Length: 288
Image (cartoon, rainbow, N blue to C red; front, side, top):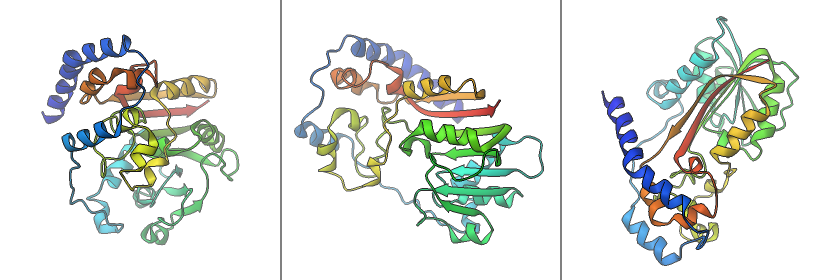
């Protein structure tokens, strides 16, 4: 019932505010492109950062109470090809606990990440294979894996196209590639800054140097800046190599009032309204 309520809330918001936001966006000039520091400070007071008491622990007991176990089930439901044991590669695995959850389910798992400092000892001890590696330059042989997946990492990869090409190369013919990632850069939370700066669309309203002057988090800048429109073009480009088995774009309509209020800041950065409201992508491909 709660999920249905959220769904209808989104639809109602899109209907009530969406048309107004679309109209403001469509008719907006392209200047001013940015807001000033006084407006940033005013909006910081209007959108205070919410504190959280959530704590993540990388151990087997905590695994089944964290999002990683749920993520593993989501991955498996998409990758399953009626095989008892799959040879699975995770791109951008971070600590590797999703790969660990898949290992516990009986699959052979390999995780790669550009940063090896976060690899979990628990996962290593369970014989998950970890490698420090760039997703856009994999050292594996062609057709090495039954499945390749990436969970909430694709929006951080410098070169998504090259990463997709590499995923296609190393997966076997008929094998599957599953991508799940959010939020997209131009969506309300696209800067990944909610722990220090909770202003919706702050990356669209204020220049990077100004934002850097008021927050400390460095990982915010490890974003590729790709829009929904750019990813759609990418999928089309490789449609001769992979078939789309499942595709879903999630929408965040809860900050459309910002587009109504500051339309030129958005119009100066994209000509596609979808870029501003599509906040996540779930895609399942099969190699032809």
